Length: 296
Image 1 (spheres, rainbow, N blue to C red):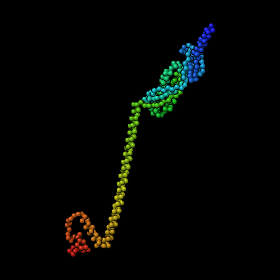
Image 2 (cartoon, rainbow, N blue to C red; image 1 turned 135 degrees about the vertical axis):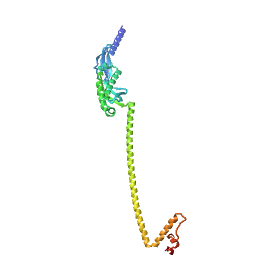
Image 3 (spheres, helix red, strand yellow; image 1 turned 90 degrees about the vertical axis):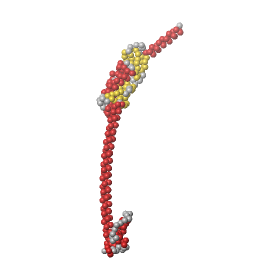
Image 4 (tube, one colour; image 1 turned 180 degrees about the vertical axis):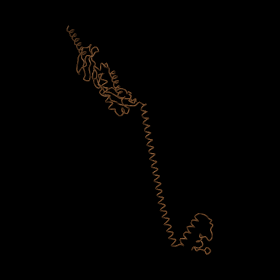
């Protein structure tokens, strides 16, 4: 009898423990809790701690309230010039209204990511559509990211989430646009190179012309100075010859005859037609150079 009562007590105790276990739930400080009754939201305002509910009729769903990252594949967007750019970005977000989040997404993380991506892409499309490629690539990236964060947060308010930050990782041009841009850059660099080469050739011609002019002037000056020196030398030589002639006319005449003999015999000729009484043979006939009587 006592064993039957003990068994009954154990069963009752087990049932109580099972009921307590089924009706108790714990909310962690990193979580947001939502209590549902037959699929309808009953309560969502739970601080971290231990709570109880009526089992079967009620159930609890918990969601991570920490900051989460949305990292999606790169997307194409059009600029104000109707040029494609490929943008790779990520977003930081967290749930700030768990009831609204459940109503909008059914509590499904994949569904939440899809809806967030669509709203952020809308904000990106609006911002890039107001700017040129130059502005979005290098000019106003910080301003774009701040504006994106603000607009995306406004667009995602109906999802029960808060967009904390939107960061653009890379902004690239499509392959065909990149090739076109690089082609224009190459053409511009080639034009600049041609212009520089033309300027260099022009400067080289000016330098060569100036060098030729200076060479001509230097040669002319040198020739003038040489002629002046030569003229002075000839004048001095003539003066010396004249003085020598006046001092000893007979010796000067002899010296001139020797120079004439040298010039004649240096020519290599072996025949001369001269008169016997010519002055050319004067010093051949007489060492004193006396004029023969027949020639007087």
